[in-house]
Image 1 (tube, rainbow, N blue to C red):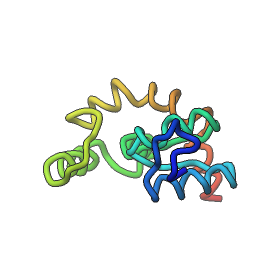
Image 2 (cartoon, rainbow, N blue to C red):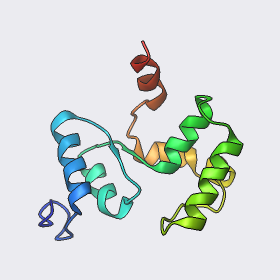
Image 3 (spheres, one colour):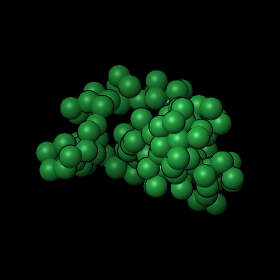
Length: 120
């Protein structure tokens, strides 16, 4: 993967490479915001991908964090790091992009079901 054999001569970074290899071997899920590295391979091998934005959305839906708490984290990331997020506010992401991202990236993986089953 780091040589680009599986991604049209575009090498993956070492972290993305390791995550994708483990997900392939164990039919797992990959958590990454670096969609340019993992999205194509995830689609090719039906590997579910979970982004930070999606994790925050699930935190809201599972009542693990309030919308206000998530907005604070969202602003801190945008204002104090070089990380990019898909929208300027969490509310905007949740209302406009979350469902689309789940359909496009999770490949039918039911994150909430897995969360609840892990709590038993």
